[in-house]
Amino acid sequence: MSPLRMPQRLAESPQVDTGEAVLRFELLENLDAGLRRCEWRVQAALAELREHDADGADDPDQRARLLAEAADAVWALVVQHEACDCADHEGLIRRYAIPHEVLARIGAAH
Image 1 (cartoon, rainbow, N blue to C red):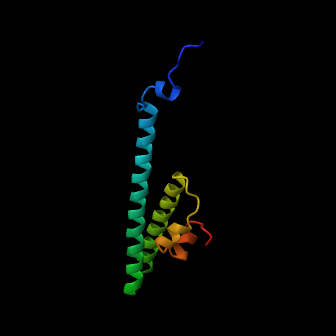
Image 2: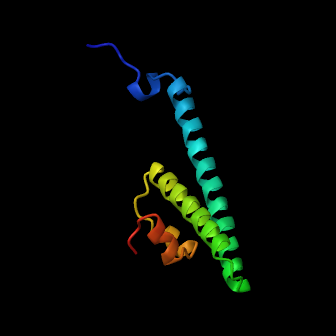
Image 3: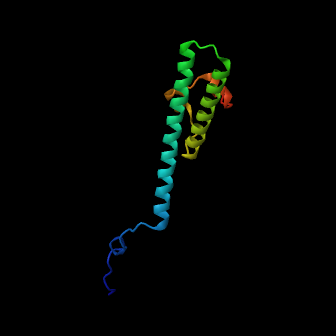
């Protein structure tokens, strides 16, 4: 007759956060914070571009600057979105109503 053994799942030591688990959590927090910062930047840049266009201002240099800022912000958001393992950007394009002109600046076909 063999001796009784405690079920293995009960014999395991309780889970303790390892250094790797803590590091993964911090990395995920940083990704999330970076994504939020990029989203805020896109919202602000697109709002400025839309406001400029709505005002009917006839300053091509200012519009070019605002368009470049919007394109930079959208590009950074796309990169951050991909860093979060999201390759489909259609949701971002719809959510922020990113103009075709901005998408063309970052080389996105839409």
